[in-house]
Image (cartoon, rainbow, N blue to C red; front, side, top):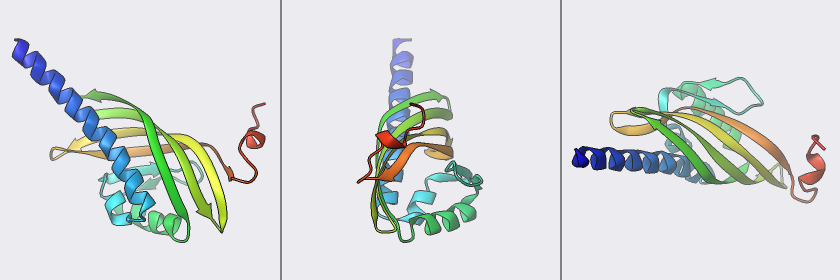
Length: 151
């Protein structure tokens, strides 16, 4: 009985780490503009909601959208404080984001979070969906405090 409990605990820890690594690998591939590799982290019918356009669904649509989004821009995401809940072969999580970017020649700074749904596919964790909520993305020279409209 204790062996089964230890095995179940080990499996959950292994799953949590694999899911956290999924978010880190996504950020790594975005940073390096490795679009096919970033999209390979999604299920075939995966979705991305960037919050400022219709939800992007499916591998082909994701590839095209990421090629456009990462074209001339430089995104340097840092992910952290990843909270994950595993339920067998599915999971949910929230992953916080600090973002440095260069858009149209301007240095930008941003902050936000991803709400994610994950699924195990052939033994590997993948994104089923990601929803990005940006709290701000502003020119570094202007700062973010002035951009908040909740004051």
